[in-house]
Every structure is written in structure tokens, then in C-alpha cells.
Length: 111
Length: 114
Image (tube, rainbow over all chains, first blue to last red; front, side, top):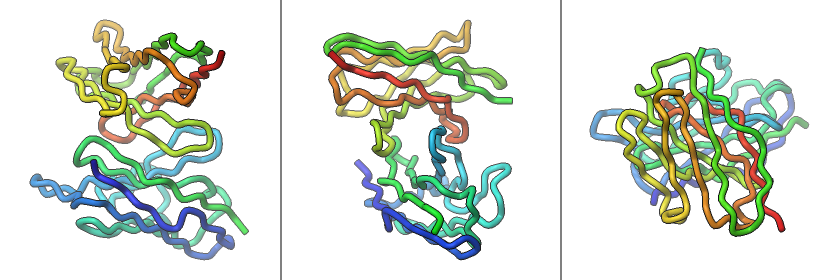
């Protein structure tokens, strides 16, 4: 099974400041079809997870451009350029190249 | 718009079974498979398995093999997840998710308690 490891597990950020979350997979997520099956979700308190980023760096419809994803192979990063109060919640990375596996989650709170 | 609407909360005793439904709308049901993901209280997300809505093929997480069955009813655009021999550590919110990764149901809380 592919293991997804996120760091840090928690983050306290001042509004307007940047934030960054790392996600490492135990195997490459690059498929022979050329796509890299790495996704980022935000689960706000009491809600279902919502898709932010698909295939490493593509923002899902309606996601603000302060969210960006990067990386390749086994190392990936989610960046929030300027954190807002509405960005609080738990962020998960997920791989979809072989079944699905989620990272442990990173809890983001506002200072 | 795409919607996945799940059945309501359930309370079950250890050893019992539960069947959660997920009714899809807003797209052609057989175009996308459905995965099921669960989340124990205060914990992370755990993938349970996937079903093809086109031909009924399934792929289950190894730890749930033998206890979980996923099915679909194409006439009503509904997917089902049945979990048997329930234990207390099966207490969780269960989500259905479109295989395109982008749409999730609202979640169904299943509580297993004697």
C-alpha cells in the first residue's frame, strides 16, 4: 500500500501570512498516462471534505487562487499565499494512482 | 448540479449489519464509479473501497475484505455500502465519493454501541 506522510500535523497562522504543507508518498504517483494522481482536500469543521487541488497543481472550480499546489514524483506541497479565517480546518493529501490513500491530515488554525 | 445524498444516521449493536445508501443526481450515474470513505471520530480519512457503476466491479480495502459489500441500483442511481459484523471501532461517518474525486456525500454517522 502507498503511504502518504504529511508535515506538519498542525499549523497556527496569522491572517494574511503564508502557510505551507508538505506531503510525501512512499511510491511515485506519476502514472504511465502522464498524470500524477495527487489531490488536496480541506475539511472544514462539521463538513465533508472539499476538493482544492487535483493532479498536483490544478485548482478545482471555485477555489481561490491563494491556494496552489506543486511537486512531482513523491514530494508535494500545498501553499496558501495569504491565510484567511475561512481557511481553518484539516487539510489532507490523497493519492489515487493505486486505490486511494490519505495523509494523516494537517490542522490549520488562526492565531 | 451533481449531488450525492446519503441516508440518515444509524445506531447498531455489535455484531449487526448496516447498509448506507448514496443517491446520485445531476450526471449520468454509470459514467463514474463511487468510492466509500470513512472517518472515525476525531480521526483521519480511510478509503474503504470502490464500485464501478457501469458493471458492478468492486475493489475493497484489504482490512475490510469479507465484511463489506458495495452494490448499485442503476434504475434509481443509488449506491449502497453494507458493513457486517459491526464492532465498536466501526463507529464513524461514512462518505460516498465520486471517483472523479470532486463530489462527496454529506456523510452518514454509524454508531456501534451495546
